[in-house]
Image (cartoon, rainbow, N blue to C red; front, side):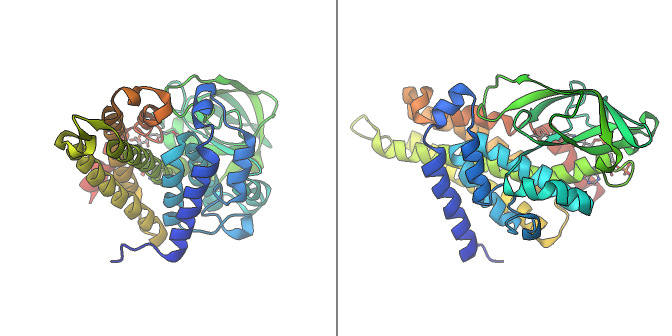
Length: 380
Ligand code: CAA
C-alpha cells in the first residue's frame, strides 16, 4: 500500500490549485451574489483539460485517472464549488456516460466537444415526482418508428441553461418498470425543448440550475444510448462515478473552510493570545483535520477502486455520505471559529457553509447513499 501521490498527480493537483487561486478566487463572491459564471472561465477549464479529465485523448480528453480527477475536484472546490459542480457533471455523468455506453457515432458527434469543454453537458434524471425514487420516471418517450416523442419535465438540472448536450432519462414502456426506461441525447434548441428560469439557490449559486420542459420533442432513434431498456442501469452506473466527484467536491469544501479557519485562528487574538492557543479552538481544528483526512481516504479509495476496475458502488456511496457530512459539520465550525467575521461574505466561510449543504442532497441524498451501502453489505 502506497499513500504517496505520484509526481504526475502532484503536478496535476498543483495546476488545479494554481488555477483556483489565480482564476477562480478573484470574483468568487461577486459571482455568488450575481448567480453567474462567465464562459471565459469555462473555456479556460476546458483548455486545462479539467472538463474531460478521464476521457481517452482520442476523444479530446486528458486521459488521466480517477485519482487525478478527485485531486482536481478537491482543489477547485476549496475555492469555488459552483465551478467544480460543472466540472463534476460534465466529467463523471456526461463524458463518462457517453464514453462507456454510447456508440462510436455518438461519441464522435458529442464526446470530443464535451471533453474539450467546447460545449457543456447536463444529466437529466430528476423530476418533480422522481428525485430519490428515480425509477418513477414520468417523462415519457414514445417509440414512433424512426424517432421517439418526448414529453415531460425535469428539474434541478445542473448546467441546465449553459449546456449544449443533455442526457435525458425517460420512460418508454411503463409496464416494464425500470426495464422500460431509456437514456437519450438531446441538443439545445430542439423544437419543443424549453428551458425554464434559473433557480435562486442557497448555495453553489454560480452554477446554473433549471427546470426543463419537453413538449412533443422529436428525438431521432440514433440518439438512444445503448440497448432498449438500458436507461435506468445507465443512470445508476453513471451516478456511481458521479458520487466520487461529489464526494471530492464535499472534501474540497471542507478542506477549504478548514484552511481558512486555521489561518484565521493563527492571526486573530482574544484574551491576549492568538485564538488557536485556546483549547476550545484548537480542539475544533483537531477534529476538522482528523475528519477531513478520513474523508480524503474514503474519496481516494473510491477513486482507486474505479482506476483498478473494482466495483465502486459502495465505496463511492460511503465516500459521498461521509465527505458531505464532514463538509456540513466543519464549514459550520469554520464559521464559528471566525465569529462575527464568519457571518460576512468577505471571509468566504459562510459561502462554503451554504455550498456544503447540496453535497448531502444531489447525486443521491445521504439517505439514498445509506440504501446503497446497506443493500451492498447485506448482499455481501
Ligand atoms: N449499477 C447497475 N445496476 C444497478 C445499480 C448500479 N449501481 N443500482 C441499481 N441497479 C439496477 C438493479 O440491479 C435493478 O436491476 P434488476 O432488476 O435487473 O436487478 C434496477 O437497477 C433497479 O434497482 P433497485 O431495485 O435497487 O431500484 P430502487 O427503485 O430500489 O432504487 C436507488 C434504487 C438506489 C434508490 C435509486 O433509485 C437511486 O439511486 N436513487 C437516487 C437517484 C439520484 O441519485 N439522483 C440524483 C440526480 S442526478 C444529479 O443530482 C446530477 C446533478 O445535477 C448534480
